[in-house]
Image 1 (cartoon, rainbow, N blue to C red):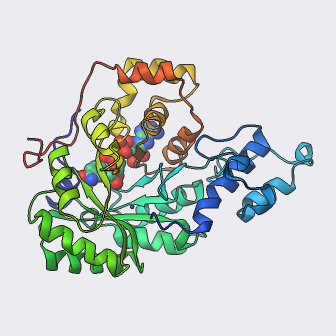
Image 2 (spheres, rainbow, N blue to C red):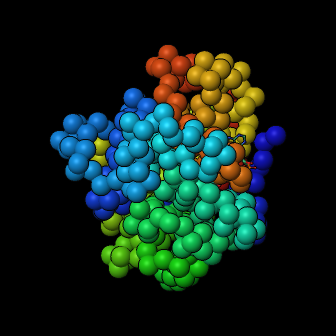
Image 3 (cartoon, rainbow, N blue to C red):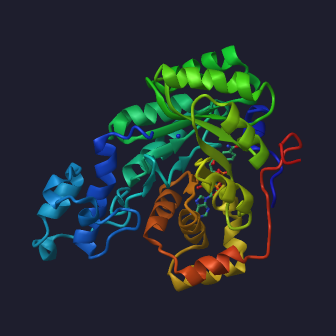
Length: 361
Ligand SMILES: NC(=O)c1ccc[n+]([C@@H]2O[C@H](COP(=O)([O-])OP(=O)(O)OC[C@H]3O[C@@H](n4cnc5c(N)ncnc54)[C@H](OP(=O)(O)O)[C@@H]3O)[C@@H](O)[C@H]2O)c1
């Protein structure tokens, strides 16, 4: 069933730097190395140590991974990990310019306790990129989950968004400070313009974003729901680089034009896919079901793997441990070129988020 309302509209009717720390760069490598060491296979996106000119001893590894490496050789006497364990950190999300390419979406996680639990489960599972928005009414819960987790702030990539009603210069500054207060953070890694509507005006709005970046309150500037034309205008207007454009993208809405535009050398904007499993609709697509069967995976996992193959970061939302872990395990699905091509050629299109005020209407 196609939903016509946007994430921002549904809750109150309007309702993720390049300055990556050493730890953030080596953590996925350490985890990826341990995974390869333990399972004889390197996870995609975690470069081989020799590709980095690094020896295993030079890699800073988290305690859980060190422990796993130390027990190699004692493998036979070790019990099998319990399937219900929330920790499936054997995978690591590849990063693009410091942004983990598999993130955790939180739209509709607006019940405080549920949101805290889901975000904590996601972080325990291995997610390091959390996506929220001032319009999701859950920044406090996201912030509390981060504070209660065992992962330090600089290992996380936190993104939030400014609502369309708060996009004039002064409002952007106030809105960002309020978001930081609710999140309990000194900075966010990425702050998006949620929609190019309401008070959005490229020069004025983006000047405030640039100021926030200069003050260190945000690491990167993002936009969301921008068409090629709007993105081109924003790239020209902004004093600081536009890091990412977050748009709906999945195998039923492949965003060829935006992907081509964002990939141009003089543009160089990351694409972040929201609704990357089409809110579950990918499960009904015959081509995805067929490819999933081949990899002993689910259509949702294939959809996420396909986004990654396209160089696009995906931020699936899930509530319970089962979906959270299933989506994380998509990092273990490496699609052959021929299967990527099969998905590219799906002859079915579906846009889920399509409000009248959307710039493409
Ligand atoms: N910038 C924007 O305007 C915008 C718009 C929309 C979304 N977003 C962001 O993108 C995130 C993701 O998009 P989305 O929430 O619209 O859609 P989505 O991630 O494509 O789908 C979420 C839905 O799929 C279900 N699900 C999750 N994993 C599953 C699995 N493995 N198998 C079957 N069902 C599964 C979830 O159910 P459960 O919750 O029950 O697990 C939920 O109902 C949002 O949470 C938000 O952070 C941004």
